[in-house]
Image 1: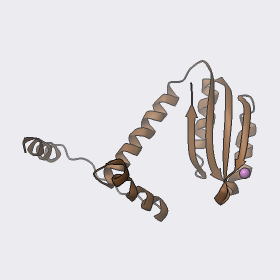
Image 2: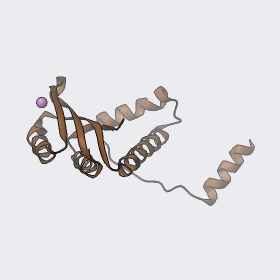
Image 3: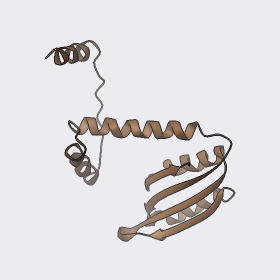
Length: 142
Ligand code: NI
C-alpha cells in the first residue's frame, strides 16, 4: 500500500515521457507474447527491457579498445545479399573467417571471426546495425 502510494507520488511529480511508435504486425504479435513468457507487466515493460539491452550492448561496443578477436553473428534478408557482400569486402582487413549459411524463409546467417583493431570492429558493427535489412546482430567479444 505504501509502495503504491510512493509510486503514484513519484509518477505524479516526475511524469514519465510517453512516446508512440510504429511496428509491423508480426513484430507486434511477438512483442505481445513477451509479457506472459518473460513475466513482464505489459508491452511497455518489454519494450523498456529491450531498449535497456540495446543501450548496454552499445556501451559494450563503445568501450572496446586495442586489438581484439571477436565473433559477429548476423541474419539478413537474402534480398540484401549484394549490399551485405559490399560491406564484407569493406572489412576484409579484419575478417579472419566467414561462414555463410542459407536459412529457411529467405534469410542468410553470417558468422564472422574478426581479428583487428577495435575501432574497425566497431565500424563494421555499426554499419551492420544501420542496415535495416539486418534482422539479428550480435557481437561476441570473449
Ligand atoms: Ni544467402
